[in-house]
Image 1: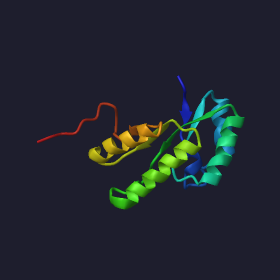
Image 2: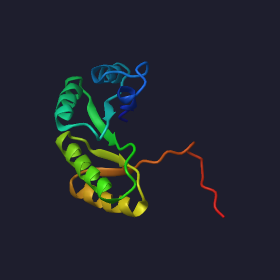
Image 3: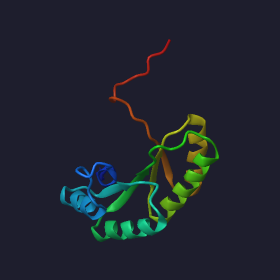
Image 4: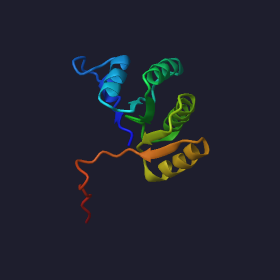
Length: 134
């Protein structure tokens, strides 16, 4: 099993909670995690630097998680194209994203054609939470 440390720790807006990326990777390594998660809004230059740090510590980047993705239209599609490029450039194998089911199905097909796996990013209160119906 490969445990991964969430990128929220170095992307936190509260400076008290925030770690820099080197500290995040050091923490992941020291507690036995094999990888870290990063943001899909990472630039190509930052991505290369971050990948060098990750590999230098014997870790892997396990996934990217899209946060605050626009709900539709061209903006979402452009973001997704950039997301795919970043995944391909940084040896990521797993992309997590949330949007409407129809678009996610199309995105999964496109991701697969690029050698990436797309996972649905959903946030529920618990594993047993259910949606109540009429």
